[in-house]
Length: 384
Image (cartoon, rainbow, N blue to C red; front, side):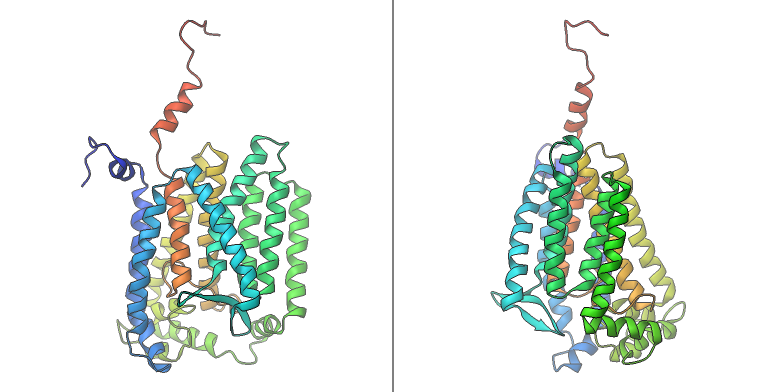
């Protein structure tokens, strides 16, 4: 335990960090590691690997991910902004490179091999994009003559175009929703709200006619016809789990779900631990988002407010999409459950998001003292 009387970077960090957020992030990662024992052995055996292959890799990814989260949590808001700009530049450059030399999986080019590791640059782009757009919105709010909103629109157009080119419509929808929410908080005029809504609807309609796999997924979702094996087995796993589940290791349906350790880990949790456990998991994500929005509401600095709200919205909307697919409320889309699902890039990237949230929500006594000094009457000057 660190004493309040101690001084130093570690002591200052411990007493200024939002320890509830920190505990929540680590607790969710622990749940994800536990669920990897339930979800991944069957997948590993099915593709000819030893049973605990993905469990070991999950543990191996957790160590640097937690290190990234804790390391970023020491940053000041200015350092967060600079780090995000650097990450965004690198990830956007890699997204361009992916289109030419990327690894094609299931009809999409989203991964690139670097030093023997398969990296998905768009995962790292998301938190950096949120922070940079928050800075642009904040600069426009502080000085209207600075075209921050225009630059944010241009940046969004570049990122959306790269995501569609991969193609990755799920990430495009997620990025659009988060960006739109931040733009709304920044005081978006109603005309822009209407244009964004029309543009989003037009984009979805265009995707339906341009991309056959998007049309296929939507048609299967609307009609229930075609290859619905993943969704059907996920639903069967949830139904079989009932309220309190079959017990750890007792799941049967999970063994035939193709992406049980990634996209459909929520269904595995439902089969083995029950609907009550899944409701508790949903409650944890809800509390996480509401606490972040509460922080943003109380924040006086525009950049911190927009960034924290955008980052927790990103985690919340991604969770909604993943869980909605598992419950057959949304068309199938390959998107992980934050901090829970297996995945190297997604786990490290979501810990970048968590690290930014921890850094931006730290209590900063020196900042409050500075704010109070603005209203203090200087010595020798008459009070008005």
